[in-house]
Length: 238
Image 1 (tube, rainbow, N blue to C red):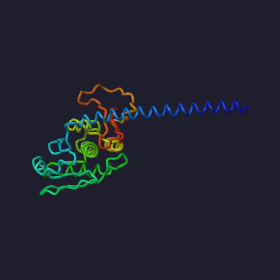
Image 2 (cartoon, one colour):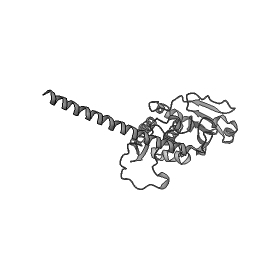
Image 3 (cartoon, rainbow, N blue to C red):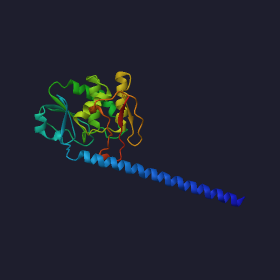
Image 4 (spheres, one colour):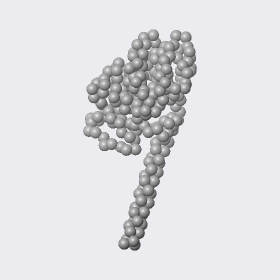
């Protein structure tokens, strides 16, 4: 009996070691996949600058943290309202320019959605000139707020809002939590969702939908180099 027990213990030990090896291999594969996505993101950002400013509508602009520091640029674009969606960057003080601060981090558990209505109303109510919404890189927080504004005041769906912003600034990349909050906001506004999110490393089968024009093609969303380990989601049309 003791020999039989020892044999079983050896077999269990072998299985445990095999499972550990398989898990380690799986983790390494995921890390390799993530690194590949990171490299793609780095190539995507070559030649771009956080100084760049993207025009969403004739009076609405999106940028990273450097653009609002350029007073000449703000004057040239007719900016009279700056929405600063960062924790550490201060609001510039320019004559005739208001600045509001939305102190939210770029993390999935950050409650950016609590500010959707307030910021959208300020953008909509700015009749004196243009509005610039910016975060650190102009990739996640500020695009999310602009998408919420477009849904509420331009009466578009989340899918349309995403495509609208991405056409003007191709490297936007919202974190998972902001996507979830935008989905909740879309459902609140329209009673249903037009998109769902899918993890880049865990692809879901594409739903049956009419073929979209090329500008609405679904593209994998790479993570920001600054937050390289923060998992990002892309969307699928419903």
